[in-house]
Length: 94
Image (cartoon, rainbow, N blue to C red; front, top):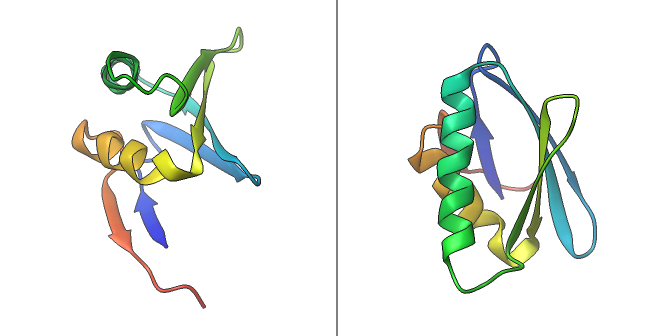
């Protein structure tokens, strides 16, 4: 299982899983974090797999990203790469 941490002064993350995908809801607290999310979005929009991660913005200022289960690790790696996440590690399931 992949475990991650983030700076709660910059972002809030909620993650909900179902059978086919994972939904991440982000409340971004700085313009820099919005720019980082745009970089992640651009990366996924440029690849040939159009359904691996779907990005939505909401009127209340939150963002939602629906990620297929098989693309979750790739999404988290890119989030870590663009410093959206502070740590990313493997954690044994108990």
